[in-house]
Image (tube, rainbow over all chains, first blue to last red; front, side, top):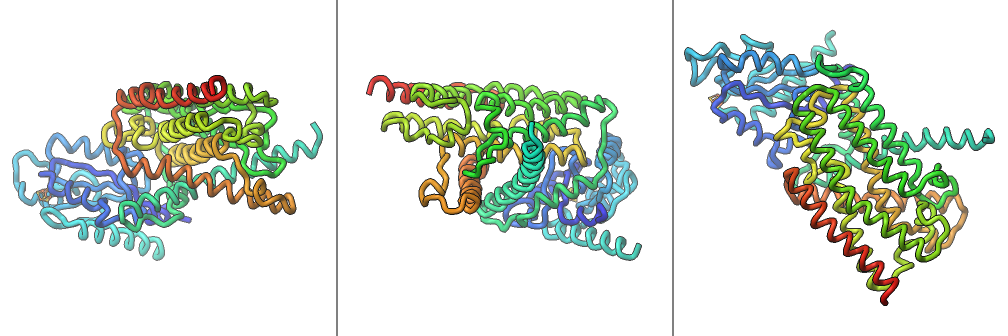
Length: 143
Length: 335
Ligand code: SF4
């Protein structure tokens, strides 16, 4: 059994705020509330990047957060998935062209899936996770 | 030691290891599903803990640069091994070879052995070189000191009552299983025992580091505390040891307070059949205690701060257990 196959059934997520307005963070936390109940799919939040499989990033990556983002990414044991939530992590969004940004996120670390929205809705985040897992599986079968 | 005994011990240890790990994971699956239902969600599938373990086993195992590798890697193994060792002392059914080592250990030994998995976690946390883990380790030590008081009072009450009732081997678990403590006391002592049961049910979540006494692992404040640097296989071993310890602690409560077997009531048919029925009954009792002590408490309340934990265990739960002890004594001497 390949690690990525088991990953899909038990995905532990770590939230990282790289300088967001906290809007996407609130939506991410809403995703794990009983209303959306992602524990059905084995997804749960963990407190340490060492326990995580999935890095959920919000925010456009400010100058001070970039080294931290790199470090947290390195702390996650392989195999790992990165999902970037919110428009500002994709392109800068509301903070586009700010003097204090060195993002967006994919300038700093590799991103597997982008979830748009300002903020991105819990349904969209779940959809992003499902799609990235499907892509993992497809890559597995074609390889 | 004869060969058959040796085989029995080796085979029994393997069987108990298997039961401890698989049973512990299954019970934690039931716990998660029940917790989800209480929050009116669907919750994870029952086999979710098994999937989690499988995933963790297959993941990369990082040893941080600041860690002391042999301690860091050794602690999870010690935690799991010591948790399984306690399982060998717990009476589980009327079958003659349960508990496996029942004749070689007693309640006091179990009390000491129960410290080992927690201590292994502390050692692992301290050796991982993370400040979060250090804070977690300190909190774990404080919690251990805190819940030890009501726990010790309960054990002392049981031993004292059995000595006073002139039972042979008062500290042995086999004696406890054979003579339900409720049969030795009058109504006042019964109330005292009920208080002790409440105290033990409150000790259990602290012993297992579950909400509301999970300050040592508090994910939201100290990022997983003791386990913050653990990943992959080592983390899986710690989760397994916790699952086994859950069985151990609840089984201890069952052995102390609910030692009855089905075969006591319906008469023994074939000893193997009766033993199997008793084993199933034992699992039911385990789940009942686990539901009350862990799932229900975990869903109903939030986390206490570490100073509140000490306060609660020493003042409130301690007072409950001491009152229980006094009532049991009063029952024997005054009434
Ligand atoms: S995408 Fe919008 S809501 Fe989300 S963090 Fe950025 S600015 Fe805030």
